[in-house]
Length: 188
Image 1 (cartoon, one colour):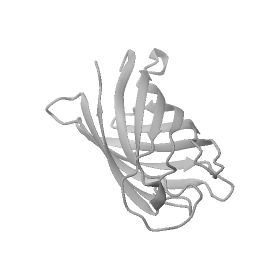
Image 2 (spheres, helix red, strand yellow; image 1 turned 30 degrees about the vertical axis):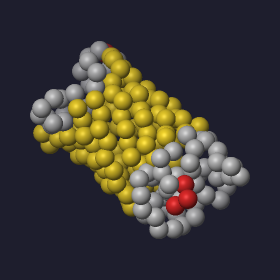
Image 3 (cartoon, rainbow, N blue to C red; image 1 turned 90 degrees about the vertical axis):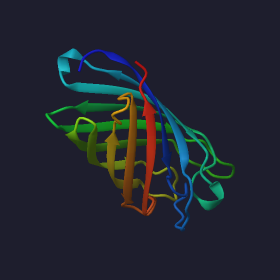
């Protein structure tokens, strides 16, 4: 792994639950997040990668069902990835500037993830991670969850990447469970 470059625009389908922490049952499409990532591979860290990302959350989730805030969010994040044979541990730290719906006071928040993945084949890997997001309001607890995920590069063209995930919430402010898919394309 050498060099640096700009990679992908990723679309994730996510649902962060009710912004005020109200418990309810709801099904539907989550918000869509567009991500642009700059990938840097420092020569001195050998087999390590540092990603710097900008994310924009588009409010596509149904606000009335409590699946989203109905507002745009913007995030800045950095991720350190270290490859050790077939195992790849990683840590992410980010900050989200939260859009504020009318009559609701939401706080910007810090978030982090820690986890790892295992490459079973050059086209397929899977992993597990813990995710923490600071509470977005005084009436809400932190959002914590465990996420299982996979990545698959179709043999047709290795610039395409399909990601899938499922999650289990650990706090009252987390979704009880969820899942999603994303599709990315790397420009060379």
